[in-house]
Length: 258
Image 1 (cartoon, rainbow, N blue to C red):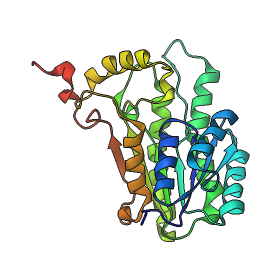
Image 2 (tube, rainbow, N blue to C red):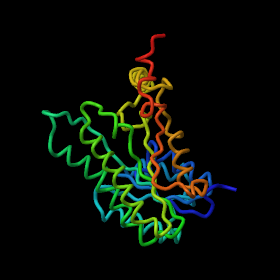
Image 3 (spheres, rainbow, N blue to C red):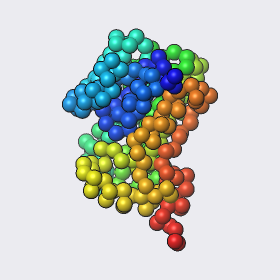
């Protein structure tokens, strides 16, 4: 008996990384999934992995509200309902003070904040009591990482957005929560080889108490909890899945004496 039997989930950015890992876990737990992404090739590859009877792919740009409406319509047309929204699609980029392009800064905010909000708005007419909305934030919303002003600001905005939606949607019995990953091995880093990933992990793990990067499957497990009835009284939570980087940064190896 799966934890999501009979449920239908919309997962933006579901063609790679955390989104794809979550889609796989949701399907394994009995759900049907509608996944979105910009890359048609990786979308179709993801559907093959998930099974054509279990998933639908919609090529969509998260920053365009009509794309979200199309994805929601696909969920209703194919599966007849919508129970879970995982607003996960996001992009990053280097935006240091004094050296940033306006176009990149605005694109990050448009995808990560505006896109997340309008994904939820498109889904709302079809969500009933017991439905679950989960946003992907980041440990960088609070960490003050240099060079990532737009990304950090966007994730801080997502946290605030979630709190507002809690107040608006609680009367309808709809839960709204956030998962905040720390450094996780996903394509967002741009590393395409095992050697590159190992080098990245060696550098970043010095700042993580558990001394390693997260795996997409570990983030997916947290999302599954928030989406399932196991979290039926969890409302407005921000669940950090970051190896302790957010809660105890001074516990990282770089600060240890031995």
